[in-house]
Length: 545
Image (cartoon, rainbow, N blue to C red):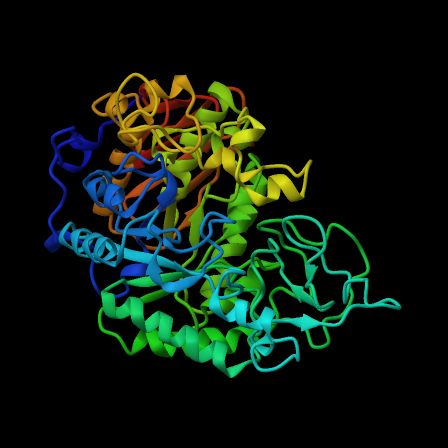
């Protein structure tokens, strides 16, 4: 591994004893979200403070210095609200309460204040497409046998068939099976995900009023923004028309469907942008939107709508230079057309971790490290999923009895069950749970993760952790600016931005290039010779110009 960051930019390299940066050195307040690095904390699997095997808010607060030292700008927390946990907290029973599994409101307040003291902003999830079936609204709807006001907050419909024994239409759940469940009185309700997650009816004024109140509650507590779960799903096509075919939707899909990416969602997001703008400090909204094209995705980040939208086209892109370049060009062009930044992400809590997607083993890790440097060199904002800075692979051999993902139980045979990317991350020590907490962990960790812990990788110049720390430090010091492609051999991507050239070799062979500049950082050992640079297979490097 080559880390010439210190000599290149006059900075000390990261060390285990490095203090978190003070709040005064945090990202600029004006447009901070345009080029920030946001770290996703999957709360259940980040850090456990009380020994019950499940991560919690106190555990996350105690680990915030790691994130500050890593060099990120903001933390995104997955749901920690009161929930039966039918879908990892994305089935919310009370949007204003912290589930006892994760702590209480005082813990949430402490986390936000502690993050701000470290110069980190805090983004929390909001889940507006559906509630839990244990939410008071849905309990009232089930009790309302006359189809009154309580049921109008959801999508209840009579069934088809002679006795209403068939679902109202042919829509399928993203998790597999029909998107409808029948109630004891014979009615059917819509759930695009698990049956425990009934979809809300956003044509109902009470739903709008309730979520305005929920957003204000957390903004008043001090959060800096919201990641909006299923931001593309709240509005359904009029009449709930049949689709006419099977296998309609997958997680992070791009199909055109009557229950996703309907134009009506944009008025909801405009109203939320007005609400966010009424608070000081540039509070932001981030859309988890599955759109069929970059142009459709760009609609979510028009000047009067949300600030960011996840770029799933980049996440889904294969290890292919032409595909990568096309996705980058299309993404930048689409967001530039509305004056918004592009976001880049390689992994999250819903997909197979990218070292495994890129082939697994040593090759997958080499590609993952190279892809990280490419991503961090691009203009816009970047998302890092917890543990990717450690090079964690997907855990593919979890026994069925420990799995909790509802997709595993509803859609046997579906690729990429999500438990494997949610295994608690390793912090220290030589045996499980590797510093995750004083007890066990809710999903078992592989023994091999002892070599991937934060403790094991800190200070090792060849580690993935130190690669990320160096890249994020350098990224902060570079001036930023527009990107342009440079001529390069087949299989190589070369781009430049002010002060830097980035070269990515996607081939299985070493490739020789004219020396692009002074080597700053590389994903594998690389030593320039004279006026040439021999770029190893499946590697990426940054060069000062």
